[in-house]
Image 1 (cartoon, rainbow, N blue to C red):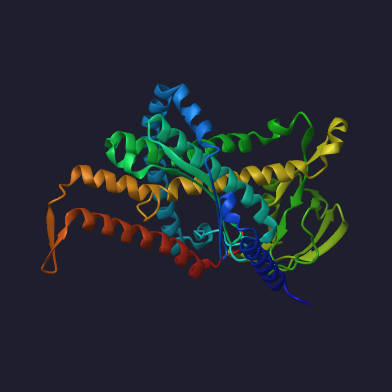
Image 2 (cartoon, rainbow, N blue to C red; image 1 turned 90 degrees about the vertical axis):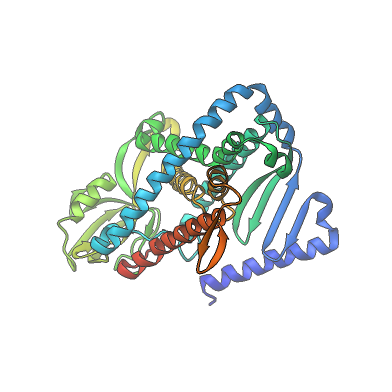
Length: 399
């Protein structure tokens, strides 16, 4: 029998191979589609009027929002640096509290179960991000050449192509408004979604009652419960103790020791498992339920939505928050091709004279380039350490 990875690889090869064959036969470029190996891009001008009309109706309001987006984006960057620094310190002194910072790679850093939810998060984040850039550019009277979507292997993306020559002629304040608008919009999205998550019971209260159990969204493949508890199983009790929320589950597990016998009352009947050792705290018991979610009973008027609708909605909101918040921070870092790099370069150009040189190893180097390259190197190393050190210290479990 082929493995999951073999099936995924075969599907990808068939999809991209078929797409390239269609491109040769039907010349998809006529429809704005550029097809390359494992890369697809679609350009259109159909959104240009929408972005222009939205921006030009209330230009003063967009200017004010653009001014607000600059400090907001840098505040998020500062908070992100604080979180990443804390994460790195925890990797050395409190390994159980650290997590590696990883890209979303289906089947490697993210499970296929979570992939569909993460995909929604990526799409929502990128659409809002690029639309914000487009509206901000038009509010500054910069033409938009095109907009579109792209697909890299399995990961979608989006873009708004603005007129670079017109952008260069704008004053620094206008450039910063445009460049920071994407991350600022992602921050606003993340905060709004966080508010919905914090009040999730109220959000679904018109159709669902209080939580009465815990949904098993996924199970650690290294735990004894793997194969015993299927995803979407609902846990109601452990050894006769009611478990009506993830918080109650965590509290119960505080008193569970490795190799304790646990009798689980679930939607699939009674299941007996042996507690393993928690990979982050070996002295604690571990069932292996990853990212448990509350289980809500629907009211009679909402039966048609199904038992799992709140769970799916919660997972979507959770991933929209994760992706939007992460992008808002990383995008503001001085890394080539990111908005943060362009913003930092613009600020350096204002503060440092173009002709200024700095001696390095006996050579005169542009001070602007030196500052940019040092900042880029430090940032990349900082992110790399947040990726490597936590994995080496405490391992990694796919999201």
